[in-house]
Image (cartoon, rainbow, N blue to C red; front, side):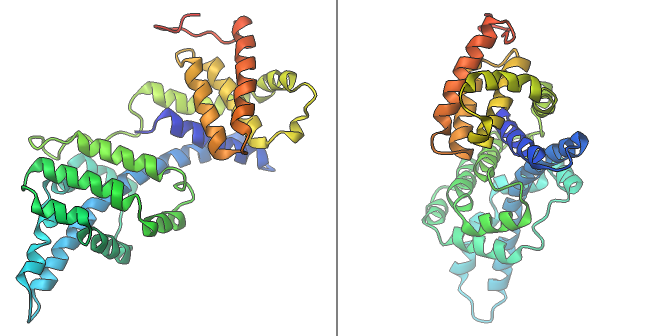
Length: 313
């Protein structure tokens, strides 16, 4: 579930914090880095849990309307497709998911006003009108849930406000995490108990190794790799260069040197993109120019060596 791009972002944020800290105790910052990764996985579980929570509220609303002295049967019947959505029921019954929710203590129990508002937004939307007029099938249930995630939950200012107040770690990753929740649901099957697999924090040992190594080596080899940056700045002084740019250069060089299986072009493109998001207006061009030059020189010196299919130098 955690991909390299998210790890790069977390590394950038934690290295920046480390560089700004008065007490540069590596163990403390490494613990903070791992905690930020863990919070990303919790956000994934939280968005999955949001769907059964909304479905539970649908049942509550149906009971409330039914218990009125004067009631409109059309009103509660209109909510039945949501209350009976097969895909959301699968999430709720998924034993793997329930075990993870318990382990990470994921809950929306104290956010009922938000649940109520989100549910109201959903059932009053044109998306819901289309859904209840379509055939009642598993695939239509899945399609509806995925669209709710991408076009209502992702666009909800209330969700952003809640997440911003709830955790400082989630500001930059909501869109990515929701896309992963969508991917999880897309892979669900009607014939599989619980729908399918809930994604693990790391899909394999390679990604976990990348996570552990990138931050560690960036700090450990800062002075060694900083020499390459200093050489290319020529008449520039590092104090005049945006601090984020220097950190991005350091992490990029670390990745290029330490991970022989990752193509240089992929590394280059990723850090240019991060410069666009996290640094100054012209940082992407600055980072692009320096990395091109540094990578070329380090390849000639055999400090950067790529191995694997299509990567042999």
